[in-house]
Image 1 (cartoon, rainbow, N blue to C red):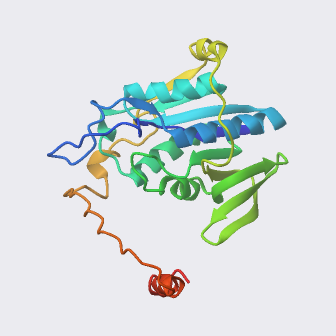
Image 2: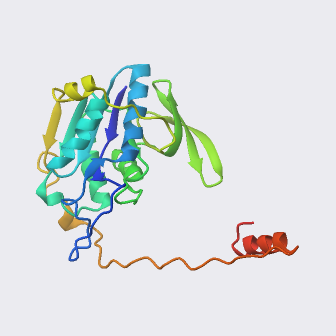
Image 3: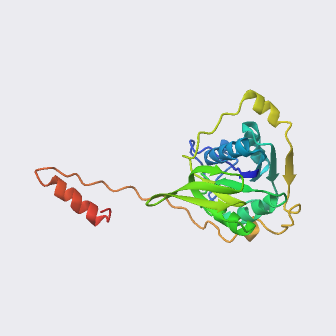
Length: 257
């Protein structure tokens, strides 16, 4: 089974970030960066499927040169090969542009499954997984909390607003996984050292035939940033025999029940 896992280097979500006052974009040059925590679950899911059915995991990323750290983390965890698309023209790209670039990098070689996180922790758009599926012409299975495969099809338990459902999709397909899908492994010292010798492709927009694509062609821009309104003080209820009724009334008003 040939599994591709999309990975991304993001500012550490556990540390505060800074915005550029002119572009309103995150100052990535000032932030401590890590492999997106959601992508660790994707790498682990790919490794488990390959361990069960054979094949290999290929990690693919888009970003500046320092994004190699994300690919190397995936290699250290057990991915066999990696690829980074890095180009000055990609600065400021939107989610759709990102999907187009990743799709072009993925389709350079045959694949059975593409795994992503549900969304990145620095963007929270959630657009890339379904856009990738559309661009690659394969089904999309999203928000998976459990994954199995028989080598020809994929069975996934999906998280939904009302509970969960089990779906079966023919391979190849795109799969996005949630944080509850597994427990990612820690890279071993042997894995970290071995990652340095694993194949790693460096690609540009020209290599993918995508000249002209990038931040300049993005369909969206950030025009302003404002602080979120402070949360209003809550209502304190004194239970003098009517507490339960008042709570029910509030829940009905909020359309919870």
